[in-house]
Length: 231
Image (cartoon, rainbow, N blue to C red; front, top):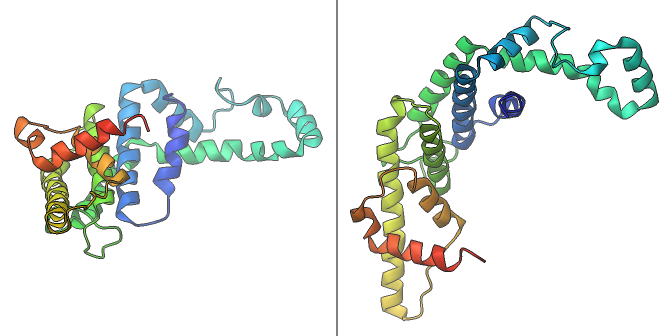
């Protein structure tokens, strides 16, 4: 798995869009890559060898090791032509996974993300200043997963407190609106969605004290989630 992640992480790191969801994904991918290199020095060594284009590295493909075999196989199997770009891909990945570059990218993308945090604590999609429960849930859940893996970014601590407060407030307001509609019309149905499940998932990474669990909107969400868990 540590050898697969660098190749998968390249997609997130190079993703071209600038929405807050993808900015956070770049923070996540760069921070995870730096963490893996610290945990598994062999990955860092592999990337160094890829940058230096050391052809005898044991993880180089058979096509690179045997030029005659490569020529015959590519001639008989045109679909394998993509393998010609294998070395270039490795070098690109190795350049991305250079320790100092990773640290610079985490800091740069993190500053961008924190600068886009809304006054009420959450995030929108593209800087439109309209709170998005989905994007905020996504960022909070991602930060929770990083902390569980031992990836600690101090600058995100206060930002998470603000984001969680914004999430809680949005969920509470939605439940209050439902209660008002039910009192008025009698047959109102709470509009549960995947975003509500995502909220519970994101919230589970952080303090779920008895006061939060006792909130009516939380009880309502948990009751619905438990009742629909097998559907």
